[in-house]
Length: 486
Length: 51
Ligand SMILES: Cc1cc2nc3c(=O)[nH]c(=O)nc-3n(C[C@H](O)[C@H](O)[C@H](O)COP(=O)(O)OP(=O)(O)OC[C@H]3O[C@@H](n4cnc5c(N)ncnc54)[C@H](O)[C@@H]3O)c2cc1C
Image 1 (cartoon, rainbow over the protein chains, first blue to last red):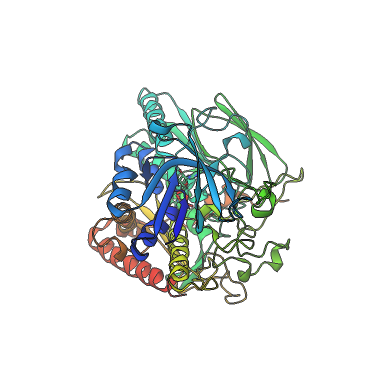
Image 2 (image 1 turned 90 degrees about the vertical axis):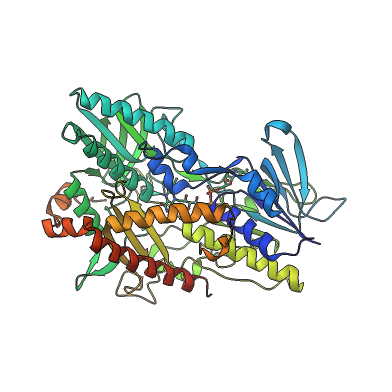
């Protein structure tokens, strides 16, 4: 009998847990530790943030799903990993602290044969003074944030209806943020709502980003074939900004946010401020703050985790310059280099380096996107690691590993630009691979031009909506769930 | 570090024609595009799991 413990029930952890339960024998245990009792389809928080979806439409309670599937769910937060166990018992264990209202604050130790860290990001609002819902800006990162943001947007629309001009700033709240795609989506959804409410002419919509140029999205942009030409995501995105009259500030690091005003520095060293009536700014991410101790109780956090708090896996973490980055630097098994029964998937694994070129202002402020780890790759990683663990438990061979590198897998990204079954629009993109391979595809920005595509339209909105329903169906583990690919 | 002039880039970006805008909302055309994109995604995920 083996016990697999999964930390985190987001896209990657929940996917891993469902596949583990499906493929392991009944006597093997699958334990999920996660602080929230609800599962959230985060991509649709954008629609909650413009008041077009209710919080209930993007979440569901996890407990009944886990009960039905035979997964042991502990509503708790993991705090310390002991990969070597302790002096009494060499079996690894993890310390958890319950957030479950019935056992709130209780501490427990769970021994494991295999541990998957899928704890996602800590939303690091503290990195920028005044950033976030506890400061002076809004967020759509959690469903509660998004619901609050929707109310603020409603207030702004009311003001516009009274003829009072409003400035709406949407983007990323720090020079090292990731998730520019989500900020872009939210900007265009808000713009769409302003139009739908016939108040667009009095509103100024400004997109502020750490990207060097529009269309970078943290993946160094994309080239693709369109109507007989090779074009790129920069031109494509700029075209959308022109069509929808959205202003942009690029290469920007938000230094601080105050009541109704934000201050930023740009890559060329200039500083500026914007007065706003509404600001939705995504935070940078870091690891959730797990620590690790060896068998003697000595702290080995710095050995297991990168300085940003994400778990080191089978990536090449040696310091290299941009021109030395290679596809092979990226991990494929997600196994810790120190313990063969410890894995990190989704946002929780430490990337070897960014994907977009790193840039600094003359003051030395880093202003360039951190690498995104979007839903599709996160799900694939969760499944791949689950398959590795199942193979190892079944055969007893601890060298077996399934592989899925972001430098060889593709991803589809559908960025909503406005909702509505008849009037919605979205930008649908596929890219392959996610991490460019400049050796394999030197002429086309490191990507396979045949599999890197982009289009804008109502059909793309339907795709986004379809993905919403499909992934919630899959996450609920309803009949045939595993036929829906990640 | 120099920054590209983003206002200029936006003002010079290609503007979709009326035909393009119509095509983006035309239900029949979009049903076809939806189907094509769905197939493209399916091909990608199936390939992604091969490794
Ligand atoms: C607003 C927004 C929109 C997005 N839109 C898209 C999109 O359109 N398409 C796309 O592909 N991607 C999108 N993304 C990215 C996508 O949400 C992430 O790629 C995905 O959620 C990553 O999955 P994950 O499992 O690594 O992390 P998460 O989904 O964040 O899950 C982490 C889990 O770990 C839990 N946890 C945290 N701390 C602990 C702890 N100490 N112990 C145990 N558990 C813990 C959390 O509660 C959570 O359940 C978006 C992200 C945002 C913020």
